[in-house]
Image (cartoon, rainbow, N blue to C red; front, side):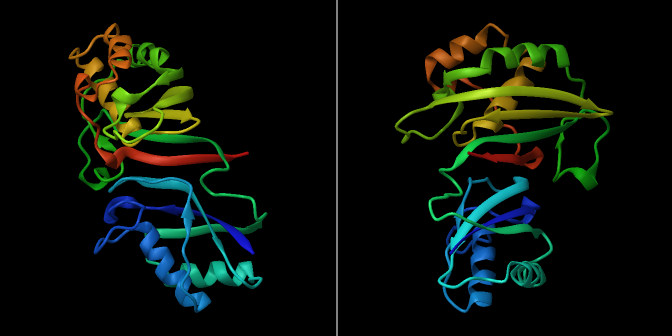
Length: 242
C-alpha cells in the first residue's frame, strides 16, 4: 500500500528537509517516528528539497506499507510523537504508480519580505529588509523571467542534465509592510528562488538594471548574479499534482 502525506513545518530548527548525517532534518524526524509507529524501518520519498531555515505550508511525501493502515490513527500517532515544528495535515492512500516527486505538475514558492520596522520576533519567518521596495520595478523584472528559460545562472548546481525550467507566473503582493512574492514553476533548481529574490533586491537597490536580466540568463554563469537571499523568508507554499 502506498500513502501520500501532506505536512507543514517550521524550518527554523532544521538543517533542511533531506537526510544529513548527524543533522536534524525534516525527513530524519519523520522517518524515525514513522518507523517507530509501524515497527519497521520506513523510508519516505519527498516532493522536494528545502534548505536549512526554509519553511513549508504544504510539503508532501509518500511511503509504502505491507499492510493497510488506519489513516486517522496514524495521523494522530505521528502528531503526538513529532516535535511541534512539524504537523501532519493529511494522509491518504494513493495508486502504486504515484510518486511524490515525479508526479508533481508544478510548485509554488512564497517569499516574504518586511520593508517596515525591524521585527526580532519575526526574523526567522520573513526577510528583515527594512527599506522601501519599488514594486513596479520588481514586476518589470519578473516579466523577464516568466516563461521557459535556461536558469543555469540561478543555481550553484553544476551536475544537472538540463537547467531549462518554465516559470508559469510571478505574483507580487503588498500586505501592509510585507511584500509577498509568489513563484510558480514546473520545477526549481537548487537556490533558484533565493537567487531570483536576490536579483530583485539588487535591482531594487540599483545594483543591477532590468536590462541586465537577459544578459544574466544568456551567460549561464552564476557569478554574473549577485546575492542569494536569506532562507528565512522562503516557504514551499503549494504543490500541484498531475
